[in-house]
Length: 272
Ligand SMILES: O=C(O)c1ccccc1NCC(=O)[C@H](O)[C@H](O)COP(=O)(O)O
Image (cartoon, rainbow, N blue to C red; front, side, top):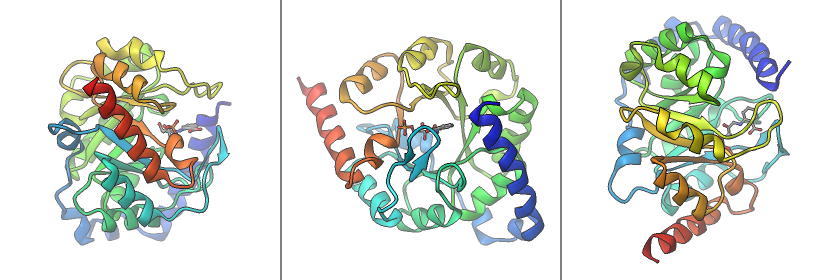
């Protein structure tokens, strides 16, 4: 059983309990469901964008506790001030120490920045939750979904006006998803996760290997294990425009300052 199998098993139980507590019909009636989202695609592709999707992540299966002392509002506002194009907020509690309230607070504190609900989406109900809590964007992880589920969840996300980041780990997952005829209508960004779900080892080679297989209709996002301006430049040269970064910032006592330093390093690289 991989870590993803364990997360999904737990997630299915959690979602069943949440549905029983707050029915989908009640979520549908919330005013936030009608809200127009902030586009992550536009934010990442805007002239001068850093492309950085800065993640608020307290702990992880690979690292255990990363940072359980920083405040979500101060950190996400600091991220935006330091140049984040988008925010990513974990809402999974058992494995990542996140909670819905983190997303709700990050949304309210950063009204014009796209916010990703970072979770393991296995049921359309979670998309309703994401919209209700103020997310602009959701993650669909190919490794835990069939192509049919990707299609159903992607279509539901679009009904709700959400943007979709589809995450793949290898060629097989990417090719299976690219075979979905409706993919360009239901997915905005394709992310390549550099972290092996079996070993937790991150290798930027994964992103570099898959870069050219991702059609230009999708914004390319490199995910996990990123920390240096040099690597970001190599990924940019390979066609990546988005960079999902959590641990490198969150492991410091001042995550926003770590982001500011990375942005400064990146600017120095482009000007030299
Ligand atoms: O981070 C983990 O240990 C992990 C384990 C199992 C499934 C997913 C996991 N991480 C989710 C992510 O995709 C990352 O939080 C995200 O890409 C940021 O990565 P990093 O910059 O390495 O924190």
